[in-house]
Length: 189
Image 1: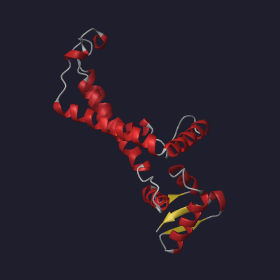
Image 2: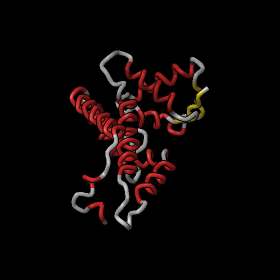
Image 3: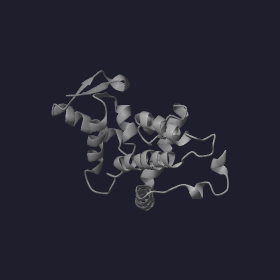
Image 4: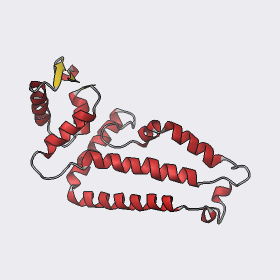
């Protein structure tokens, strides 16, 4: 396997576009560090929910964190094309690593950072932010959803506020509730 041979990686071409991807990753890393400083309680809440969901769902953490498996599933065709491209001429030691690097860093990692930023980027100390977070989560949920799904997307929002916003949206004609209790399903109008 020549990929691990001394000097193989150093000989791989690195185009300008790939360097821009690396720069973007650096920017997101900086935002991540800033978020750690500004909202550690939000990250701790997300971590705790992820641990609970991991235990409950055999390591499938959906709705809170950004599972790479979901990104691969969304980009499945590109993923397999990339594997094919990067493995060509592997037996001769002439394969190219760049397609895989571009996919992993440019598609998977940047997508994960962007999705994470969308989910936690609304978190500030401003009044009404949790309501905005809930409304955004509702807009991004499928046409039918449960309160639990909403809680998973907005772990820092209390159940009382979730219920209050759902009632308000129902009264405004934007949502309809079918069922009661934990089995209730909400439908967008």
